[in-house]
Amino acid sequence: MKKYAVISMDVEDWYHSYFPEMDVDRSESLLDGLDVALDIMDQKNIKGSFFVVGEIADQLADKIRGMDANGHDIGCHNWTHLRPVTMPVDEYKAQLLHAKEKLEDVLGHEVVGYRAPAFGIDNERFDAMRSCGFRFDSSKLKPQKSAKYGVLDLNGFEEIYPCIYRDGDFTEFEVSTQKIGSMNMLLGGGYIRMLPWFFMKWMTRRYLKTGRPYVMYIHPIDLSRKPLPHVDGIGLDRYLRTHVGRRGMVRRFRAVIRMLEDAGYEFVTFEQLRRMDFAEQ
Image (cartoon, rainbow, N blue to C red; front, side, top):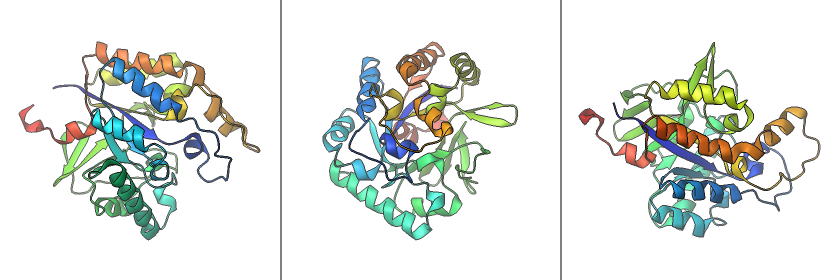
């Protein structure tokens, strides 16, 4: 069985990632982390999949057009970064269509990929998303105990390859997790940055031994070299989640890429995977 890895990024600013429901000063940006990721990936000739929040598409228009021309996937990550499960279905669908149309205006072609903010999607909103014309999604997680994540049953889907599911012409890509006791630990995002490195490295190597497709997700804030803007009144939990491990994240990102190389993984995009005929493998 061939081993595939997808490096994906949810292209959102710091306030989308950790303060989506708060009215904070947005005058400072940490989107430089996108450039850090692209530089590292360019050095390795890795193409990735990037899911862009619609309300910053104009701000990043030249950037994402260049990424698109260079072979990266550009997908949709809603208009704002509110979790779909917190929104009425009609409002969610209207925002999603607005974001899709904006990205298509910027790129000049159809946008077929999607990921829900914070993976917060359920079956009803999943069906609404499919009706908007997307062809693939990467919002599925193994069941999580946190209420912020949605639950997708994927009724009617066939698992055509480990962690890859298909129904007709629509494909769902599961984000990588490693089961530890009763918990499914995510192998991306802030977890790479915040968890002790020896533990994250052990979990990642344990997962890679299975040969299943590896889906990493990161955010610009994880790789940004800028300090986080001050936000008044945040609790200790949110302070730690926004600050812990940021100085060492570039090193860890490079280290995960090396682990994938050493384990014989081939770097691909979701769109490349979507077009593969797994019956021949």
